[in-house]
Length: 100
Image 1 (tube, rainbow, N blue to C red):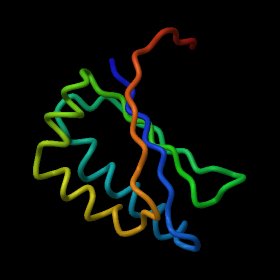
Image 2: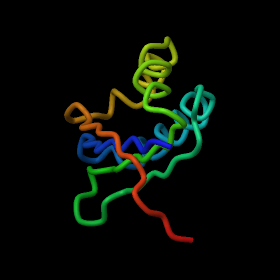
Image 3: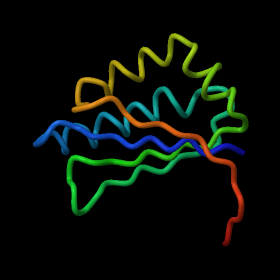
């Protein structure tokens, strides 16, 4: 399992609209993608324009090749991209340990 961590900075004052857009984008696009295992959306308390999207993929290629290389990636970006104040910072992680 691979964790994609996307640090998203959106335009000030657009939080309510972005909340709807990111939920829609995940439900309609990402969750239907090959290798999708789950997600979590976090909204920063101290910096209201900051979000962290965590998407769990079966393999790194499910995100970097299957999703990013597909037409559905363009759909995803059309839904959430208009709210970005800067390009997202995206990194991938291997699970070292998990509790629960």
